[in-house]
Length: 153
Image (tube, rainbow, N blue to C red; front, side):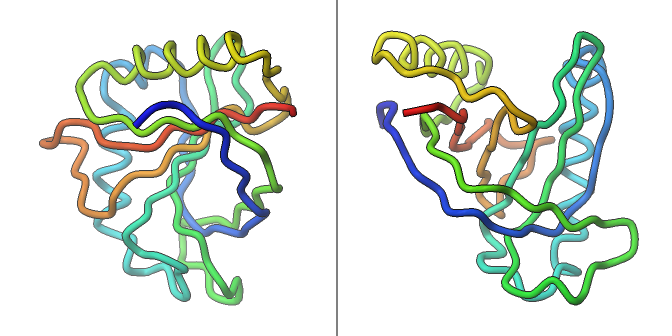
């Protein structure tokens, strides 16, 4: 599937938080973090779609970033221990579906598409939104995800 523009309404999600460096992520900490979330995703009550894992990258700095894995929820009354409520505002995204081992190349391709099509990145707290199938195991499966980068239109 080629890159395209997608509008997503604001939503609430419940999930877990990881804070670390790009080096830690490159060494596989995000994969382990994702694997551990899969063991707990059924604790999230009132999920809109338990088979759509949402990855949210925030606050990217020179040293690292904050990353959440979560499920969108309809009701925010029940938050499991060790999890947080995340509010995601409405955004227009440049989006790309990807399956393969070179995820960084898919990101590069999507950033190139944004520039070639005359869009501007929307700078704010949310840097990336990723969607993973609920059955995806990052420790054993080839990466499969939808990448979303906020843009201004």
